[in-house]
Image (tube, rainbow, N blue to C red; front, top):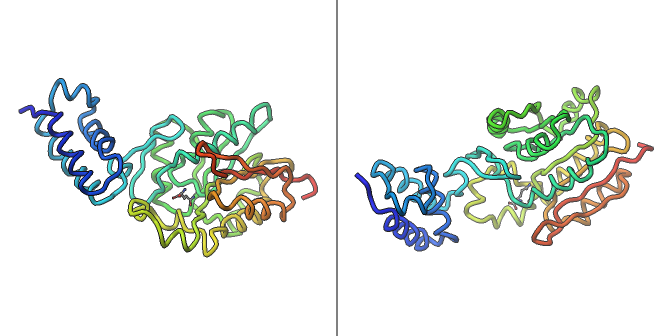
Length: 285
Ligand code: GLN
């Protein structure tokens, strides 16, 4: 049996609106397109097969309870790539594309052989870099096996060969296996929310792993730890590049300078917020 797609779309949009879902029409569209594999415009013409109605209604129900759309769809786009996401892994944010852009710009016209991505999560940064720098060895590290499972699935799906390491980036012991293989670039989008941010999370973000968000009382725990430990794995003249929360530019710049990083710069994201801090390891290290 075929049902009227426009009627269903209007009904689902109104339902999500009544549950205070912003962009309810966009979410209803994404769900209908995901289940059917067709564009909404096509569905308006062809109608929807009744066997697709139940999965669509179930997914809409989950969204009405403010589960993130990205988890419901099971995939999201980052830097032009479709990535699998789900419970237990941070959803890649558009802001993080600024970090990828900054690193790629720095790598242009330089001889780069090894990039390490710390706290890789879904693998979004590591995979975007590998896709644009296919001859560079990319190593991605995360503490969460859930996250690494997604990163592995994403790497396989895109046929990108990156090394995935299950380890704590703040544990000195993790460094031992890297001493033989120093990096030209170390990049990280670590957890950086402070206690106040964590107390005020949007309902959707509460579905994401706290371990990927919480950066200690002041949000700076990982910047201190990573800078202090991983500078030892960076080649002289190599780049350390972080994503930061928009109010952390000053603090993270000071942390990097206190470890003798040079040319420490701030890069803004498309919304005009401070989003990336990057600097060069000085040769006297
Ligand atoms: N940008 C994320 C947020 O605002 C935080 C991600 C992180 O801590 N690295 O929810």
